[in-house]
Structure formats: C-alpha cells, structure tokens
Amino acid sequence: MNFEIDPTAPHSIVRRDFLKKLALGTAAALAAGEPRLLSAATGVIQPAPTADACILLWMGGGMAAPDTFDPKLYRPFKPGLAIKDTMSTFPDIETVVSGLRISQGLENIAKVMDRGTLIRSHIQPDLGSILHSRHQYHWHTGYVPPQTVACPHLGAWMAKVLGPRNPVIPPFINIGQRLEGVGEQEELKAFTTAGFFGSEFGPMNLPFPEAAAQSVRPPEGMDPGRFSSRYEQFKRLVKAGTQTSFVSDYQQESMLRSMENAHRLLNAKERSAFDINLEPKENLAVYDTGRFGRGCLLARRLVEAGARFVEVTTEYVPFLNWDTHANGHTTAADMKKQIDAPIDRLILDLEARGLLDRTLVILASEFSRDMMMEGKPGSNAADQTTEAVDVMTELKHYGLHRHFTAGSSVLMFGGGMKKGLVHGATSPDRPSVTIEKPVSVIDLHATILTAMGISPKTAYDVEKRPFYATADGVGVPVREIFA
Image (cartoon, rainbow, N blue to C red; front, side, top):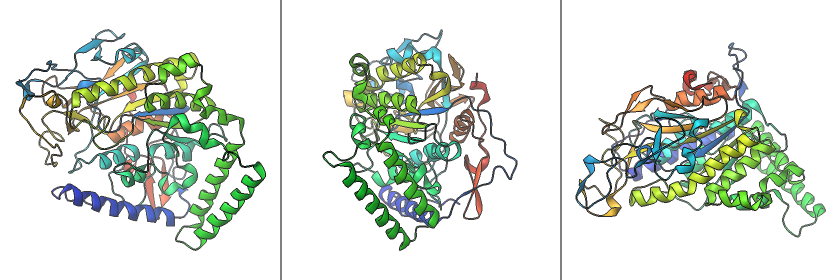
C-alpha cells in the first residue's frame, strides 16, 4: 500500500516525489465510491466513550520537549558553552503536581497539570527523510505517506463514524492554519481532508479565528433572495461539473451535502458561536495572545455549541513558530507566551462549564528537537539544519534546532484521562530517548479513538480492501492513562 521514498535523495527531489504520489492518492479518493463499514460484519465492538468531543492543540513545526514539558540538563547561555553539555535552554519550574516540573514560561499551564496526563514517551518512526510534511501527515492520519488512497484526518474519522453532536455545527473544524499562501501548502492540504470519506466529513477551515463570524454570514449587502438564488445556481454548476469529470457519484453527492450543511449553518442561531467578540472582554483579553490564543477561545465556544472535533494550531510555516532552526531559545520563549495563558484558561473554562470531563483536550506536535541529533540514534536521516556548531558563540546558537523523533511529550486533559499522571520517561542524559513505556503514533491514535468510542479496528471497504482507523487495525490504546 505504501510508496517508497529514497531517503538519500536531495530534499527537493523527495518533496517533488512526495507531492506527485500524494496527488495520485487524492485523485483515487475522488474516483472512489462510497466506503462501506466493515466493522459490524467482522465483529468489532465499539467501546463505550469517555469523551463526546475532542480538541487538538497542534504545536506545528516540532515543539521541543526539553524546552517545554520534559526539561533536563539546563545550562544558561554564555559564549563558549559546549552543545554537548546542555539540552534545555530554560530552567524548570514547579507545578501543582508534587514532583512534576515543566519548563519556565509555562507558569499558567503548571497550575492546571493536576487536571491532566502528561505522556513523556511519545515516539515517531524514522521515515528516512525527516520532512515536517511527512511527519505531520503521519500524525494526523496514522498512515505513513504517501498512500495509494487519500487517508482521512483523525477528525474526519470522528465526523464519519460518530456524526455531528449538533446537526447545525460542522463536526470537524480546523482553526489557525492557512492552506493558501504559505510554504508546503500542498502537503498541508494532503492531510487536512476527509480523504475517501467525502467532502461532508472534511474540515471547515478557519485560518483567522477573529474573522470566523464572517465565514457563517451571507455576503454583506446581498439580500436573502438573491443569495439563495446564487446558491441554487452554484449547486447546479457543481453538479454539472462533477458529472463530466472523474468524480464518483458518491463523492459528488458528498460534496453537495457539505454545501447544504454550510448553507444551513448560515441561517442558524448557533452561528453566534463563531463570533469570539461576543465573549466578555475580560475573558477575551486572557485568550488574546495571538491567533492561537483566539483559536482556543473559538474552540471552546464551538465545543459548547456542539462541535465534535476541533483542531487549533500554532500554524506550521517553514522556519517560523515551533520550527526553531535558528534563534531557537528566543523563538521558543515567544511561542510559550502565545500558548501558556490560553491553554490554562481553556481548561478552566471547560471545567467551569461542566464540559471538561467529556471533552478530550490533546496537546501534541509532529516530533521533538535536539541540539545535535537529527532523527534518533543510528538514524540515516538527512540533516536539515542550516548551520551546525559544537560550541555556542552567539545567542542564535542557543536552542534546539534539529528534528528529534526518539522522545517527545503529549499532554492530555479531560475525556476520561487520569489527573496528575506522568506516563513514561526519557533518558536524563543526551540523547533524550524514550526509556519507559513508549507510546507510538498508532497507539496514541488508538487511545484517542477509544476515548471517543471508536474501536481502533474499525474498518471501511475502500477499493475492495479494508482501511482501518489505525494502520492495519493494530493500534492498542494505552489503558494505564484512563481514569
């Protein structure tokens, strides 16, 4: 099922090859007929859910665990500091959980760690060439790219299998990530999709949370009659266009149903959930640390209104945000300012509204970072750093610049998870590899899906073969972290 990619090829060639093969999978998805649920026929029993909704807080670009939730070997910067002698570039701080310390700059999150489970042993596979796009695709779909079919995003599985919590609110909403006008946009589009499930299970994309309210209003100045007339004409054009293309009847109907769902929302009272300016000013001010912070507020409002799955991202753009190839310490300090207060308030707001117990909140990233090592010990992955030094002479050298896959952190709140738990561990010395209770991407997905009431063995017939919610249906939930 997998295409193979030559890990020794230059990154520009790997990227072109990746895109070409992703396009083939997308074309196959559009031509595919209706996927048929196999689980009932194969005796798969869906677990009792511990959560009804899910919020994924995505740290796009590779959040360094030693500078966030797994601090160790801190040394303050000074010219002449050897890279081999340091890992964390921030001192650690206490949390409300006895013995649990996280990184300076996350003082607000430290106050709510007693509501969450911290996994310090998340591992990613060595995909040969450690491209952000490949690892983000793998994390969001559970499948190593590229594939011969377009794999559904984790949120699309929830939308398809569970359906909407509120028929008016889209079950899958993506906040904060632009899919146009940014680097690697085609790769981002490849996993931000419902794949073969069809358009109606795909995401509603809201790249700018402060403008979300505009996306659920008819065009300003257009009377309702004219708008409805245009909408009907557009539906006819879509139907005529798809009939003359390679799009299957199922995919065409799914596209039309997604349009109907969007039109229904324009006339529903629930559209007020998209307007964060309706929030009390004092609460809005806490969340207002940037697009990510405002996205957290929007996610809370949407879950209150009945959204099933919401992803909020710090936005992945090459060499920005968590993609800390240069000026790593300074950039990480800024990113923590953007996420610390909003995440704390999101958890407290959900708790105050009685929603946290049934809302699974996940903070994750595609991999961690290290100062010296690309990939993991023994990896042949190509080194993508633009500058390598052994001794720091400038502040820009101080930070975790390289992609590291052998040990990262995932933070989970609510949704049936234990409170105040630390699961797994990484080595106290370099390299910071997982040494206890490793949690793979496939098993993390199995855990998330199980919490939502979806068996990891759930399968659909696609092109006359089973396609599973976790790769090959072998994902195993981490039962130790369930309450």
